[in-house]
Length: 401
Ligand SMILES: *Cc1c(COP(=O)(O)O)cnc(C)c1O
Image (cartoon, protein in one colour):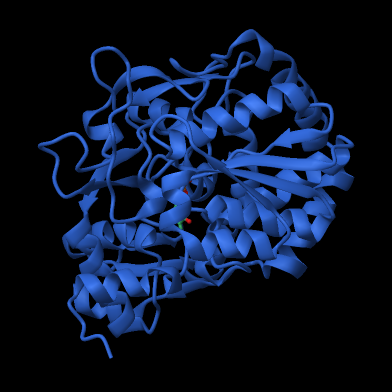
């Protein structure tokens, strides 16, 4: 049975999801699925996970009423779910810790993953260090050159960073490379994916690990306001922080939900954006059926976003299904709108946000003024922006000293 909250027994959310894999990856994926099915229902696994979220990540993250932003926008009250205050500065630590715990439970010695800009790699290397696992991160050679600070972080945390020299030497090639290594080495290694994407069970597993975000937000808002939000807003790259916030509210039909993807420099030319939901078509990418930005032969388009964590030519299959059934509205925010939102949050609230999260803030800035003072908008502030300040300074033409 298809539902909006859970995949069916074959890993499909409506027409999306499933497992589209070469035969040599079927055994490793089946093993993960079986292990996760057991872990999910084991109270001792969940207790260990929740203890790490509390004592290591610092959860619950606050739900903060942005009074100045609310006054500035005029309209709905805007609350920020402060995932930027987590250890390592973003939501990704929520699922990498879950993946690392699962690896230990399965008796694996090593975590393996791809990374684009390096944010998933750093979060995974962190979890691996904490839990005494080896960590191997595949990264395109071009990305390695662009993302030196994250490469250094991963290495300091004890991870091995493998430079991928094949194809376009970017994220897609790193995925192929990491999957290739996994197939040969899965008795010792768990592949730990970076978002709610990939073959089943990864989209459901990562969603479950992130769902703490929405459960907390729901309880916190209940305590502060005694009610549900009018609307939720979150940025969508692969879709993990957004699914984390949305999952706890999907069945509350009165809650409007917005996923915000990057329209980058504009929607007219492929390569200028990563607006998968706006311009994508059904296809197969990274082992799942979903909406993909692709040409007629199924080759993914090059993508662009000012936010490196958002430039992905696909989207998690649960999101694709939520779009099909009309439960979530997928909208876009541009590079320029996100930079504006970045400055707004810095000046009005004293918060330097991740440029990814600014896509959600930019949409909230459009939405809040259309609502009344009785309405409440909850924005997922998925990460902090220290990583983005050099780039933003250059973009704003701030004087170098
Ligand atoms: C990686 C990242 C994103 C995008 O990834 P999702 O899987 O869509 O959440 C958004 N915000 C931050 C801060 C990130 O690091």
